[in-house]
Length: 248
Image 1: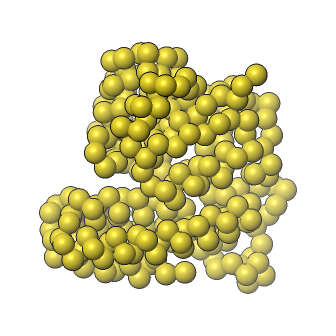
Image 2: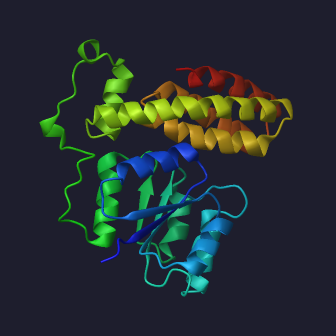
């Protein structure tokens, strides 16, 4: 039997990487599309069993994708739809309640949350992926003994089901991407490009919280708010503050 196809619609490379690492040991085929346009093209040519989509993306939003799939059932057939977003406030949840959404999943999600969601959607409850051993079998070591900072030890326990190798592999990937994000943010700040700064802040606040960097998460949230308010001086200053939180 062919493996079920999971379509992830997500523009943030680090979030896509996290999802891919978490689902690696599940019997699924993950297809990542970074835009609604790419997702629609894939859906037109392939049958999928589960769609996991972010809401805020460059170009058409995830909400637009959901509306398109509702209007044309041939796109996703009987696939379940999961909204995976950091913007699930009361207003958004009320809007989604009237749509054909199977489940919502708030960012950042833990290993267990993501695996459980996919297992439930695809009825894979009998699987026992090795990527996330139960917490009781691998208690988190004190930071001083493990070589991890306190916030990292907490992140391993909270978001990575005490799977330290998974955390460390993801952290290294983040540092590579952070260098690129830093260059992109510098260009956006120099050009007072509020849309780009908002998108960067929105994506980075999820990743930083996943890594246990709660202060960086708060700085990114304030930057996003400044960009939404079209406060250029505050947004530029916010980016300079956020950049300090991207260092290894």
